[in-house]
Length: 172
Image 1: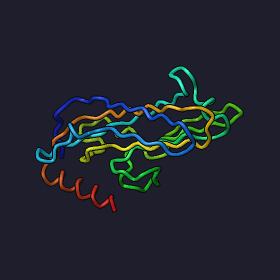
Image 2 (image 1 turned 60 degrees about the horizontal axis):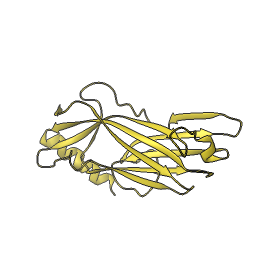
Image 3 (image 1 turned 180 degrees about the vertical axis):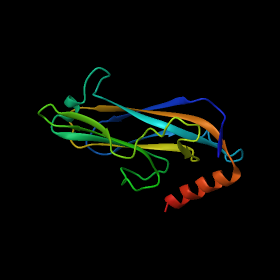
């Protein structure tokens, strides 16, 4: 299906939430995806690092009360947090906190690690990855660093067309 053009590399973006409303960021893939050469990004895994207002502070002070921080990565711009059955959803995570000191981070979608084989992964043919995040309560800024482990692959014409059609169909 795919032949690797590069080894695995990491794309990183930080999402800074400054209120309880949704916050957005993007990861530009334009220099990696090439329609003419049927070149795509193969996402192997997505990691999330939750931090407070500074690199050394925790998120408990950011929430200030019982609450959560939810973050999602999609390959289409949905304008916010989406349901788990959305085909554009690449990865999702949530961090829950209660004032009794219980802190829990978990993926709320099928595993965000797609496996170690050369054919394992999520293929992306769009030129952006879209990041949406939301805090349930706000006391001070919170930061989430998103690390996307990926490689560049060449797809057969049929496979590239199938992924492009699926992505376009997901847009509806």
